Length: 224
Image (cartoon, rainbow, N blue to C red; front, side):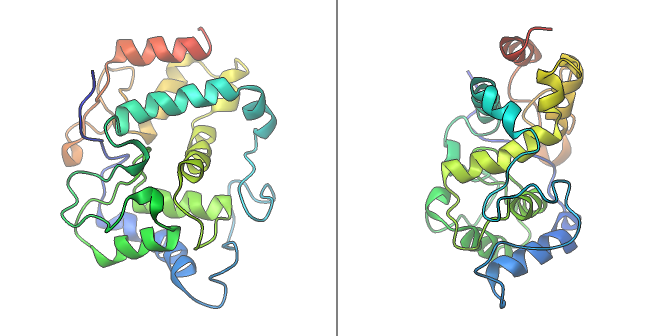
């Protein structure tokens, strides 16, 4: 039904390994604060963390719409990592991690990224690339020793669902098409309403599910 190989979230280029990645990487890999949740500058979700894990701005709405969130995660997983799920590693990576991603700590994930430059690093069910992973790890206040478990991956993906406007969509304040395009701007395996990936042809990206499928599945969450 779907392609065997996951797609990149965004095309991965050297610019994605810039300051944001480096700062989060350094916090994860060592230093005096390595065992505490990462702190830093301004965050989209400042003041909304419990000190260990991220509490989404729409936490109440997420809680009331558990089935909707789970269904969205499923749709994205089918587009990005239908074969290996939470243990998916982008197939273009020549040097894979030495153990399944779900058995790795966040520090080990970032260490693998740093030790294998010049290759794709999209990882996990939601195919996080380094810059995105660094950002959401910072936003949830995760610790270096936290495992890249299915539950952690879901938490990190929920930050991106909030970025895409999940709360507004569920409240009827964001159209189905706009929400779909927002999701497609985050995950290259999803088609935009043009029918193609927003990143079609970039680093081999293309939509791995059809627009008809995507629209029908989103309609199950909230009919237009």
